[in-house]
Image 1: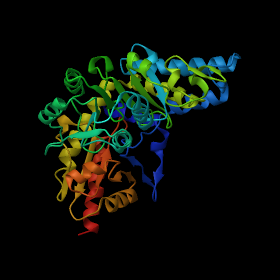
Image 2 (image 1 turned 180 degrees about the horizontal axis):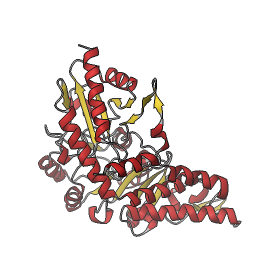
Image 3 (image 1 turned 60 degrees about the horizontal axis):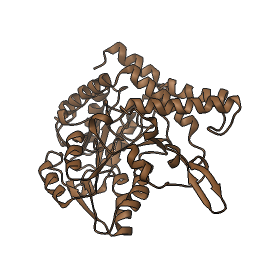
Image 4 (image 1 turned 60 degrees about the vertical axis):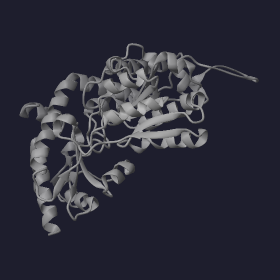
Length: 410
């Protein structure tokens, strides 16, 4: 974990954390699973682009265009290196994780899946890794099956191995649950899936920001994640895809950079990665994301992970011991920096509203995982999610505020 001086230095990197809200309460931000805060290094990189190098990329031959293009493509290389990808052509820049998954469903799925083929998902998926497959299944008459979770909030791998006997064409699962915090055994699941002849897509929106991810080691076929959950800007995400698969897939959108040649009789798509990047991209956001990657590398992903493990264990001990509170999901050694919980007799929206009065930002609701909450037989939960800028003192403040919640409803 970070010592006091390191924690203060990191806190000082994020200007928004100096805000005081709701009658001069210091902001405690426990909603990083929804979106992270941004350090000055990222804010400055975006501002510098607009002040110094603002131009469209890839086509212009003037100096500003060449500067912007270089910065943008350097950012792509940084993102590739961050997840252990050697070839930047395998990094497709999208708007977000959701669009990345939709790209696979619309391009690969519509091209290569046939009637009665099976897609295998899990019971802990975010809507972004459910709805695109439901849409595709309805259109092509596909089968969707689900790997269940056990009572500890972990995937039942025995059932997974049994479901693989049905010969699914695609396995798509979250690397880390945004509700339970469960970190799934991605490498082992990819190995089993490939042995069964299936491709694998991993939703890495909650994993890449919080611990080191090596695609070469995991051996996923597709991997999606977003900038805004890892200290970067909103509006930009990544789809990693194996080059051999991407080459076989048709374009997702038409126009702009995805074109090599157009005639009155048709068009020829561009080379990778541009085949899947239609129109003017999120240039400033890409450059800002490159700065975020540099920032996280400077801090160290292993240090960030160890810090979050400490916070999660601490929160389990402090919050989990409080009367009436039940923490969802596995024990701290099996999860990332997320604690979702219920408070007996108190709706999560009421919990979040009272915490907000104390300056504490948490998330309440189904967290875009309604089927999971149905599985757990609860309508909603309260979620506190941690990142590198949080501290144990803030968790203590959360506990005090939760005591006030209990007093209000006693």
